[in-house]
Length: 132
Image (cartoon, rainbow, N blue to C red; front, side):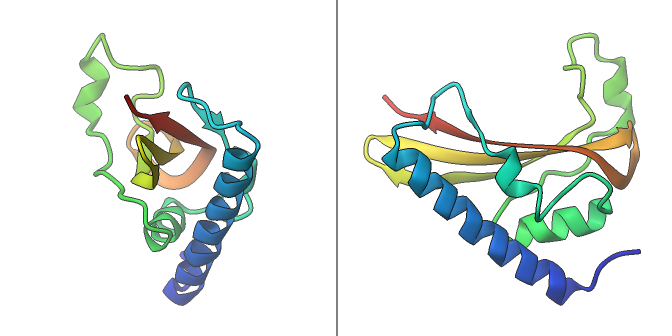
């Protein structure tokens, strides 16, 4: 059953605050990497396995993430698809800018199986740095 929207919006705002805090800590420590910096542990209190997909997406939208449509089942026929092709990848890009660099935040929600967007099976989150 979906959580009420107000709760998800509050959770999204708390997630956004947590991501800013972690970003500032990583930036100060020089630990942001172009190859990606894992911040999954900071996201799990807000969006975690076992949550409904609807709640997870509402929380991420409230935190400022853009969420693409769910992948279509016919993508399963593409031999070049990644292993977890049916995951939903939410992003904030740019999350932060520090000229000449841009930091983007990504949260990947993996459903239990292709086409079954009811419960979140796995969550991963990363910051990526891009620039010149």
